[in-house]
Length: 430
Image 1 (tube, rainbow, N blue to C red):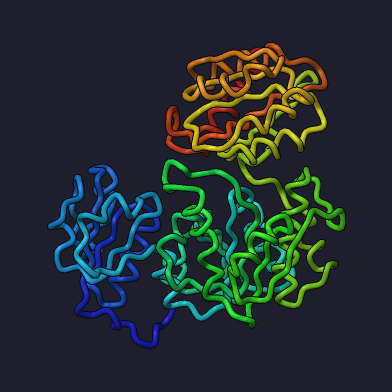
Image 2: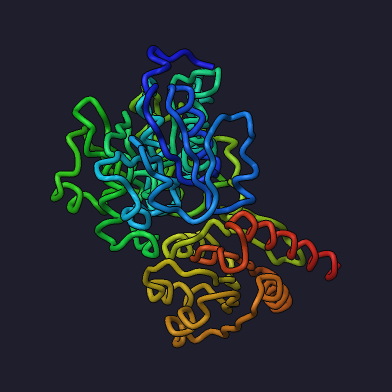
């Protein structure tokens, strides 16, 4: 475990952590190491029961109440809890931060932070791989896996931290300051959490506000006029577009060419050349549930893009295919214009197979697409229907454009269910 200069600097303070998930427990452990008295609030008895008794935290289970925050100097919010949901319970003047913000107070290593509506995990992972392949010791984490606070509690210290950061985290990170900030794109998403598109964009851009001319902001050329008009940062700025200069079979489509360009510009800040970046890209494997080829049977390719939770990510997935598509979609719709998908449906989609919730939203948006559209209550039924209809040379693509919480705990469970069902169908059809 690393040594902090003032390891007891929060002694005498009371910190309340909302949520006993991975990031919440990491934040609580770091706060405790810094000398704070820690109180963890968790609505779920099952989640609270997983907290080891020897952690020394006070744990309160059930609906949050004002008395749970009594005496708090600092409140750390889980990324899934909107501040507005608990604002009325908080003591006047209490400081409210994210786990990301808390961890950043104790970091001395340079940070590359990647945000955007789509492509964050792929680009963050790619940057980490490129740097590692070129001899840098890298920690890759944040929203995609290991929390920043968990890294700080470990024994190993990296040269560079590469963090995926979400709007949920950034909205409560008032001083978070990366050395390189990457904005990949921006479109409608999380409108079930953010009050408006403006609030969502403000959250995304907040990390650029504290950057200066020693830092680098990387953003899409398509947003240059809007970003410059906002005066969004004092950092040096560079804008990217898709380019053919980098190649990777595991990263098909124009959106991934944009991701590779953004990764290159971020890595160039640390002295890497174009050849260095291509060397890091070589051998990169597609990430689970992100346009992942699962199986091919009798000329039909099955693709798992369960990570697709937005309209833009669905568009990118359809565009990436060079085969006719049988599209699986449905779940908890988070906002966006499904009408933008219509030209692609007419051009590349043979049929649409809806499942779960939001049937009425998809059917209303695509009623004039001119293609067959069916609905099943479960993903498994929809997969079997699409697989039975599919013909040699086509692909069955799961790219839901929704959250998974109607039928599944998360997008990973949805993707695993798709893959298991595909295997069952292939075995039965063999």
